[in-house]
Image (cartoon, rainbow, N blue to C red):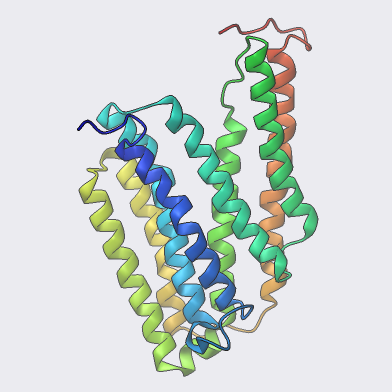
Length: 268
């Protein structure tokens, strides 16, 4: 029986980000001591955050590579082009919402993330109904990079905030080392299975080293006390400000595509 066209490998890889989302949020909330203290105390603090960090990092890996895999296999599809940004928006917005619920992000930041994505979706729908095309803009790709760095960076900052617990508790320290090893193995197996190569593999290797090395640093090196909530708010705030600029940029692109700013319509 032939596989339905929607069930291509790249689309299933994209779906991983959505499937992982409940686990990321669960362990993140446990790590922030919002959940888990009664039924699973070991997940409170650095342990829960480390698991959330690895799951979130794997989701980001699928985000970077699903397009590459689709093109290399000749399985690009309209569904994939719609599903990929939807999965991105859901995964990052829900994480930011969880951080907001515990005071690690301000309301206006989360509002900007939501308004940008919903507004751009309406722009594209309206333009399509008028026979126009709103092409992807560079600000959208850069926005995704800022939001990715904010999600991963925020969880890592919170892990660093538990450095005293990690270095005084052998179990927590072993969890950090184990998370580093698990992340490295997942990365190697994933890239080998899907034959990621060339410039993308080099880029991913650099990003993997940057993302994984703090797990070892916090396990062995002392980190001074700092206000983790303030630092996380700053990281998410920077991402929110660029997301706001992306919204403005897409608004300009929408008006140009519609011919409202002296630019002819780009017909389908």
